[in-house]
Length: 468
Ligand code: IFM
Image (cartoon, rainbow, N blue to C red; front, side, top):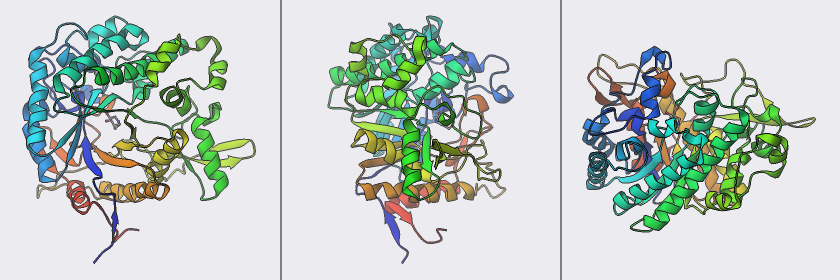
């Protein structure tokens, strides 16, 4: 009998998706325009001119999605609600048909024994709000509070697990600085810091809305995608350097990959407000006139206690102790990569969970996304043998399991993603799913990785045979 690396009893194995990436039906049943509708309809923004107009058509095929999850034994489903489907103008009038759609989805999940984890905002901001300034202005944070109140009032009797924002760092960086995501803006440093602050404020207001209007005691969290730093060697010096570089303001360290430095903040710039109620003092000083406009009351709202921290982790950077402090160790040219270009670094899951959990004393952590894009092919026999993805999951899960040695309260793990979908500016050219979406027919075909995951869930752990 082969040995199984067991996960704790009641560990939550799940899959994640997001509204714009799978739903389609972009203007059906009274839905308002989102910034992603506008962006993808703008020539030249998305690879090959792809749009999310149809995507996986989950708006009409959600029962098939649920059926496939059930067949794989998946017990938790993280999906997001499209803000403009509920509030077409971002605030004010509620679109009842949009509300009904998510009731039907939640009911179908519950009927099939699958627990919903609902993300309130996974990037599809109502275009009307962007026209009024988007996350540059605080009124958008208050519109988010109104939206969160509607969600709490309408769904919290059925759904108890909530994620306010997905990867606000990506909204700020890709959407407002680089212009490669909607709304395609390239704002100044000062505005960017305001965008970050307003995103954090939205999160805090969302948590408060759940507390005030939830029909039961809900679990609230946020899904963050920190820059993960891992020690380059097993030595304790490199571990200390890796830890320091998570939060150090030194520009050279603010890199996500081999590219030249271009990030403007450390993880601390995001996590300190959430967990300590303040921005890191040294970095606040350095930013001088570029700091955001904040109030003490807002910092209190941002640091409202939550029930779990969601972490979306794909890759990390190696760090070593250098002569003048932590240094990045660049990846070798032939380092393994996903088809999207991201580096494959299984240790990222271990350090990515351990370091922030220990630093902030966070009791409950959930990996709300982890996965890989691969060049999947639908074979003549109707199968998709994504063995590279299976290998990826084996290595990442083995690495994740090490967090239990440190008594870290890791509650769950969600694969990104259930099915191949609209991968933002890459359109449909990157496949992250454990189910293959045959876009011409919209059939969902479980890949080898889906059957692998089914086994993991059944065993509540990872079979260790054949592990390298
Ligand atoms: O597809 C995205 C998702 O929307 C957010 N996290 C990363 C995924 C893969 O790029």
